Length: 197
Image (cartoon, rainbow, N blue to C red; front, side, top):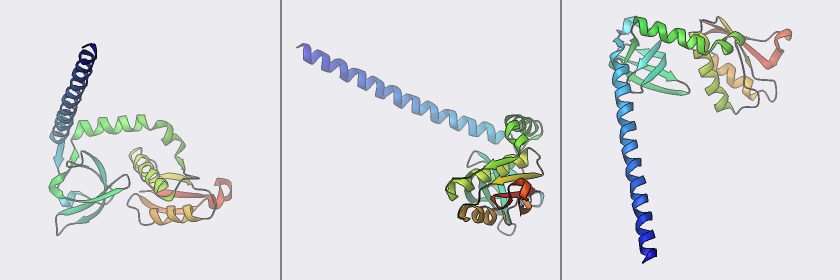
């Protein structure tokens, strides 16, 4: 009888926890939806003529900012990149943040990145190529938002694979106007110095 009572107690606890988890998941989903809805209300629609490569736009379906990589004016679509992910989006799915909110966000981002921006460099020595390029992409976005004109990418010499991947990645990058190998005092061939647009 005691065992039956204990088993019933355990089952009730398990069912209670399961019920709470389902309720929490449902609430979490509602919060995410409300946040997306709130974010979408702060977004101004833009025309294709107002956009250019390198602009930062808000992508409603993704729920966050991305950089414009390419414009397809005839199709009314654009290629955007957020981190290492690229996707094509219709113009109706993107916008820019409204005046005061955008300024506040930019100020917050600048404050949040003050240490990284002051250094204006990223060290990716020892990383795998995919990981390094993902970190580099985020760094370039942050540096551009912080208003930096030049950044230093420390990739080391090693086998040269990482240096080659970095230079291929930033060649023709919408945020980079040009780049060069570091001078001897900057780190020589183990460093790439990029000028931002």
